Structure formats: structure tokens, C-alpha cells
Length: 248
Image 1 (tube, rainbow, N blue to C red):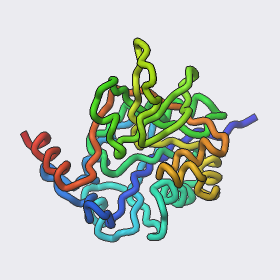
Image 2 (image 1 turned 180 degrees about the vertical axis):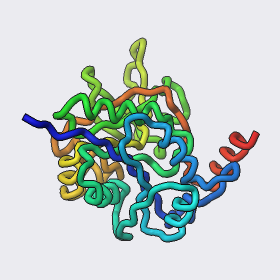
Image 3 (image 1 turned 45 degrees about the vertical axis):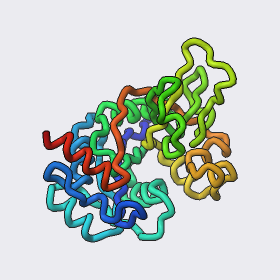
């Protein structure tokens, strides 16, 4: 009996429009567009069978092609990067798993992406995987609503995601560790298509976190722990700080 070969597709969503940082994917950091930094990191992965930048903007597409990257053009009406990744998956019918990689994390650890891919391939029933890095009690990031936190079961699966501090520290037992969620997701192909067909859930709308849609629909989300705390680039100010770091 033959089995379907497992193939992992890496998708890097990139859009021009951004309230805080229009044109962010093409912003130059240490001489290269931001999106190229992400591409270069992903190109080091050992477990991605295909890699493409998903965009609806010709300027981004042309820049990616100029540095030798692959581009898949998508519609311009997607409400999220996950929806964009699902459209791209349709163009790669052999992909059994899809990893949605943030296009604004130029220092993303290639080994982390490989770990997500390996976990998906090792468990044929696993619908979704993501990552988190530890934060110690007292870290100022814990109070930042822009930093998403996640609580995890003893089986290593997500219990809840929130912009608030979770768990609430009514007591602080020895060994308590908080976890910062990293916005990278891996999906089993059929689950990804189901996910984008579900309507936004109540908790998702309340927190503004689409991964809660999976939990509200009873899906498991494996959490891979990592020491990778590489920053994303959300503002021109953050881009300037990273430019100085990479240029020195």
C-alpha cells in the first residue's frame, strides 16, 4: 500500500499596506530589503521542500524575483496571512503541510522552522503547530498587549493565547515560566483549508488572535519551545535599531 509523500511548503506572506509601516517588506536593512533577510534565513532550512513569498503587490514580487526568490501572486482581499497561505497552498497541490512564516522576522531561526516541519511530519494526526519562547516573571514584555502570551499543557499543547498576562499570578510558585508566542504556524493541509472556512470565533474577535479559532473548534495546537527570541519589525524605529545591529 503506497503512502503519500510528505512535502512541506514554506509560505512568507508579504503585503505592502501597513498602518504603522507602509512598504515594510522592501524597507532596506543593512543593504537588503526586509523580505530578503527573511528569505535568506528560510533558505537555510533543511525540511522545507518548497518556499515562496505570497504577495498581492507587483513591487514586492519584482523585488523578490530580483534577488532570486520565488513568488506566488494572491488576491488582495485576504483578512489574514493564514488566508493568503491557504490560497498559495492551492497552487502547490503536492504540499501535505504548510508553514506560515512571518515576513517581518528577519532573524527567524531556520532550525525552529525545521523543528515545526519535523513535528508535523512525525505526527500524522497533528493539525497545527506553533512556537513560544520563555519569559521570566517580572519581564516588562509580560504587560505589553502587543506581546501575545500562551499557556501550555503538560502534553506541550496550547491551552490559551492572550494579550493579557496568563496565567494571572495570584500565586507565584517556584519554577513558574511564562511563554511568549511566536507568530509562526504550521498546518496539516486539510486542516488549513478547514480553518479558513470557519467563521471568526468569539474569543478570536475578543482578543484579536486568529489562533483562538482553532482552539474554540477543538483543534490541538502543538507548541514548540525555543530560545529564539528574535524580534519582529513592526515600525520604522524597530527597523532602524535592527539596521544598526546588522550593519555593525
